[in-house]
Amino acid sequence: MVTDYPQVNIDTRIATLEPDKYPMAGMTSHKVTVGVYDLATGKNVYLDAGDPTDRYFTNVSWSPDEQKLFLIELNRDQNYAQLVRYDAATGKREAVLYEEIHPKYVEPQFPLTFLPWDDTKFIYQSQRDGYNHLYLFDTSAPCEPTIKNTDNGGTCRESLRVTPLTQGDWLVQSIVGFNEKKKEVYIATTEVSPMQTNIYAVSLKNGKRRPVGNSEGVHHVQLSADGNYLIDNYSTPTVPRNIDLVATADGRTTKNLFRAEDPWKGYDVPTIETGTIKAADGVTDLYYRLIKPTGFDPSKKYPAIIYVYGGPHAQMLQNNFRYAARGWDIYMAQQGYVMLTLDNRGSSNRGLAFENCTFRQLGTEEMKDQMKGVELLKSLPYVDASRLGVHGWSFGGFMTTNLMLTHPDVFKVAVAGGPVIDWQYYEVMYGERYMDTPEANPDGYKNANLKLRAGNLKGRLELIIGGNDPTCVPQHTLSFIRACIDQGTHPDLFIYPGQGHNMVGRDRVHLHEHITRYFEEHLK
Image (tube, rainbow, N blue to C red; front, side, top):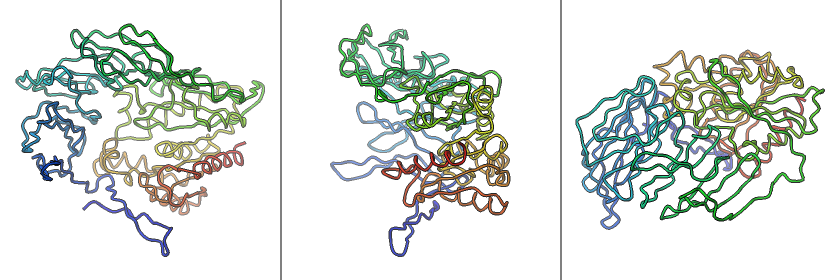
């Protein structure tokens, strides 16, 4: 049985339990079956996928004729993926079309995309060569299984003819659509820069690639049905929002549909700078955003706050408006703080090796990189190195607490929201993908267990949680408070009753007021 986590509803008299199904790393996981429900007959046909124990079924895709279903099936360790075809009418398992193995993890995130003019061919997305790219599979061309070596010690096994469509040290973020007449697929990519999203057309005839639209900023587009036009919704560091109608043939803007006014017009907006520093490995470039206080005086000494996330599937800096600076970051700069954000190794949009270098040791390499950001701050003559703070939420809360406890003589104040404290308390799929199980990786879990550093606390640390957080369950923070009591240290704790992992409604306004007050009282 999957374990229940006992969430408490305080709105009843007496308070009642409303448990969440929450398997923690290493514990019994869900058993999932996949079925097809017939609206006409009211009957279910379940796929003959075998025993679902310790398996994940992901990215369910239909064939264009709706006769076949495709699943990407993962083992519990998430290092072995199979693309499997099923008969939708009978549920029969027909064939394994593709397999992918990696010594760390395989993370399929996209369903199949069939070509609209040829239902025997589909596009499969994979990071097998180090970055997420497109591969054209031809179901009309089965072949003897062929094993190939892939990036970082992985292998794949192809049972169909496979043609790479894109390649390079950049990644495909999404498929936008097709131009059937020209036999082109349109994609959003990081080819210009890891901090940007730009649109390209790729020929299915010869693989040639061409940019569509301007090369600046971050673009989110919609493609017309015939593939001849894009509605291009984009932002740059100086353009808050622009929506253009773009001809895909030559990338020319045919009409501006909307141009937003600067929402900060009339306000005292601080200076925002971006740049790169070397990661702790001495090789990798890391992007940072530095916000100087309004009315900046280089002869003064300012307190500084690092805003951190640092985990998988997130990127804090982009070349969109104000370099993706949050309103709170701007506000704190207006209050006289230097604000720094750095995308460390382990974050997204930089390729597989950049992200999976944290495997089985979450918090280790990421923290080393964040300390390079501290070195940057200390090198600035206008930063008061005795007044450094750090703040983050979720994985960023884990990073905040980790930094505060591992470098207690560096940071004076920290606010950690919804933090992971002990990865053995985190959910099974995410936790095991990046850390393995506690039984298989005891040293990794021990090194990332922040309760064991509770005695290191010197400065002011506040933990903030939702009282019914279903993601980083309250056990994380409460067990940490217990460890601090046992070690004689004194963190602060604030709970939003009834809230989940993120505060919503008026509580969110209260949250940011509360975080601001904490830094104002203890750092400034």
